[in-house]
Length: 413
Ligand code: NIG
Ligand code: FE
Image (cartoon, rainbow, N blue to C red; front, top):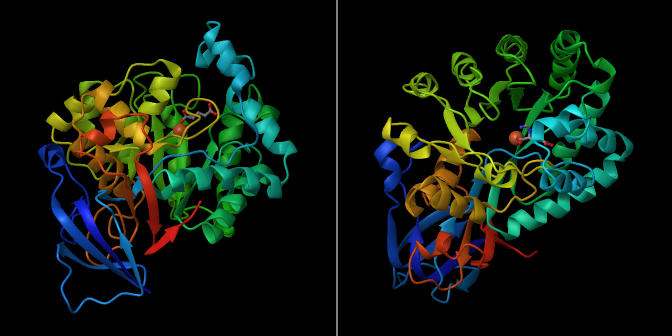
């Protein structure tokens, strides 16, 4: 199937093939063509250029962008979007003054979601998650990572990962799966954290690997959750089965999580609300993508990661939604881009690069998506007409994502 899009006011995020990620000052550039067309063939970007469309280009379907812009789809490299129900009671607790850590200590938080997940059938979990998938696809996401971590028993972790596999097989977007058994200590192991970690390494990881259910392994490495030593053990156990680390680090404290991640070749270290010079230094020259989740910082009222400092140090940074019921009940990447501009002083170009190509890198998919490049998947969205690219994050609640296309086909919500 050949799809032609014409009358694109600005075709945004054009890159030559082979650009894996953008670092430091490179992030400020967002190459584009004004008044453009784009051709997708068999699900991939086949050609593009300035209007008029050359006479020899033919298509099965022609779409008029009607003066809207075309952006590469968002690559959301960190979510927990398979979960049961919701946790607005904790939202009220927070309004009444409790902190995220206090809620967790009282048995709320992640353990609350684990209880609900245990009682919910795989079918129901899938149905709830697919509603969220439909929502984020309509908002412009084309690739997404989804974590387990609300199971916390072998059986329930496998249940979650099977739901993620089913989403991967049935949803129009590209899905990557992460095993996060070490999200919290399961209730049956209360007070026996080290035994729980043993179980994650000896029982859960081999069981997950046996069914080929995960691409990545994650650990919530932070104060009050898992230590750097425990994290290292889990990452080593994952490595034996080819699971690449992507870890939660430095959300609640300067925890050494960044350094552990880098030392184990993590593809990304995520959160980073608390950073110091050593953590930034550890990232320099590494393959690890620092990934920021401003939706969580916003929702929990935390400080934001030092994005400018990291880019000044020459690092590339990625942005993701952290879509989850406790700290970020939203998968809206446009809002994430706006928050990055408003609260972390990223320019619109930097934030869009962080949410597309660098997000693709953090998913291990930058050869496949994240930019307008011949040969990549034809994953993109059209906006409503806008005066400039900067208008996109500026108009931070206006629904500017108009039509979504994945693998060269329009996705109708
Ligand atoms: O990324 N920080 C750890 N995990 C999630 C929150 C999970 C939850 O509260 O349910 C996060 O913020
Ligand atoms: Fe998270």
